[in-house]
Image (cartoon, rainbow, N blue to C red; front, side):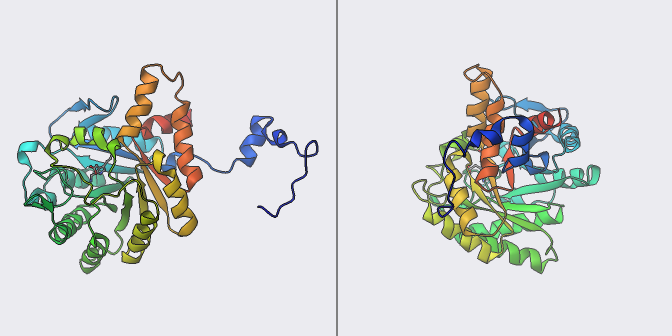
Length: 333
Ligand code: PBG
């Protein structure tokens, strides 16, 4: 690039390539399609439930019967990947998190039902204990400490049962050490060598997760914070070490999270590694954008497309976004 000799104005008129839509569409460098989108959705017990989430206007908890219809509609719009997040009543959560590997828990019932009814969609399941944990943390808490090795044993059990119930992709979001190799080995030893691992490799301790914790009811349970396992947002080199480690441990794909304020990390990972990168436009990012549009502080929904395009431009092959059905619909129209 630096060696290229550019002609100077007036020979060089870059606006020539911007003068109409046809030429702009020909020379564009990145695209955005429904096949790039993964829809994260919250599921809950009950029948006919479509329960609004206060901190995420326009996002709901769906009972499985309603979720089936929503997923089918999204699939018809071209969204082929859904990430399911179970909302377990707080009174059912325990310190040992054992519901996490119950084959009849909400997530596993959802997996079986959706795979049976809508086999063309692929299902992603977070591997982390927070939906089941009395303490709201992603790992097991003993005496106020999130205990690493105990947690990865539990996570591997959870992962295997999700795989047995039909999960296509397991997405460890817990940030414990050693979990990717533990989960990979457990899957392989049980004939699930085809089950993919999308590692949340660089997951930052972020203030952008509030809406999600509101959805799960885990927010008020968390003692202290998640800073002893999620990454410090002052760091960037560390993200490269995490990605390198997870590739080495058997991750098929890596995730950077949150998204928009971590595009620098996405770009660095893209420049340094050869592995599919995904990112998560998390609940707080969604809430900011949706809030601005709903209150007319921004008059157009174009900001949604612009932010998603930024993920693609930075190097992501896919994006988890609560806007997925909305965007897929707009792309069709
Ligand atoms: C938990 C998990 C979180 C999110 C995805 N998985 C929250 C957290 O780490 O506390 C956040 C997603 C979002 O904010 O939309 N394992």
